[in-house]
Image (cartoon, rainbow, N blue to C red; front, side, top):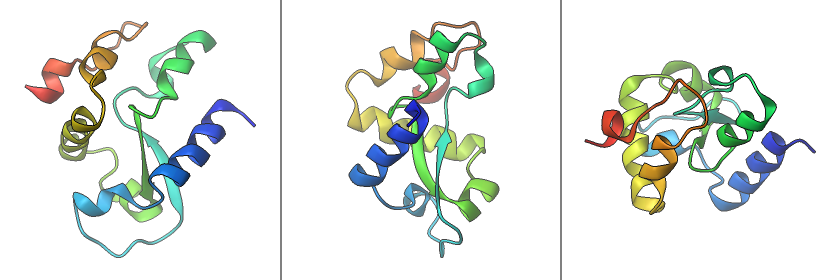
Length: 111
């Protein structure tokens, strides 16, 4: 099993629901998908850097409908950054210490 599939299974056990419900209540359509929010797979070129992307601080579970309609919006990304900051003491450091040039800084999301 690749690391991305492994993380999705772990998130399904820990969270197990469409996390977009708290942002925009809706009737979920489609299965749960794992969405990278702050860093995308295209942000880095080296396989070592991709390990940084597949991290529970960077990913959420959302239904297919929410993924298509709200999953990549700035509003949801900023909202989810606040959620992650409440759940992970090291979230600000995670955002600021990406090992590649394109960075989503904690300042742009949390201040």
